[in-house]
Image 1 (cartoon, rainbow, N blue to C red):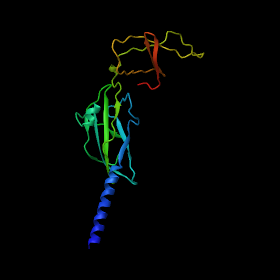
Image 2: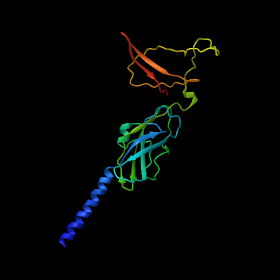
Image 3: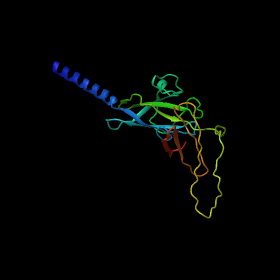
Length: 208
């Protein structure tokens, strides 16, 4: 009798440990917004989110998810001042999840995370990801078109013109964002000048 009781207890413990291990091995990653990782210049007010599940076990199927979002990374990690909190949503969908939180405005950065429930257990919260809104309205473009002072001749091949503007900054720059557009194509670059001459130089191949 004691032998069968010991075997039964061991089996229960093994099954319980297996469930705990399976749950611990489930995580969420590869968070995307409009198919991009941490994108800038998002121009839709309800961007679509997606993620992938990583698990050691096979045949892991999502049964529910929860998404949280905030304008502050620290608030998100503490589940405070959230602009979007879906709660537990019963769904196997992990792509094309539209943002339905507070209204978003130009240049706002939104931090978000997700957790899932599956047939093999649940995950913890994913690492935070973010997306940043672009200029959503025409009036937000407070700028003028610029063009080179040259006469174009479509019958010959002309070199690509380079436009340059120098300006001085009074304070130290923590971060900056350039919104650039063109009738055809454009590539932007910046160069920092120091009292001793030219400093850091960078070319912006991806332009918001």
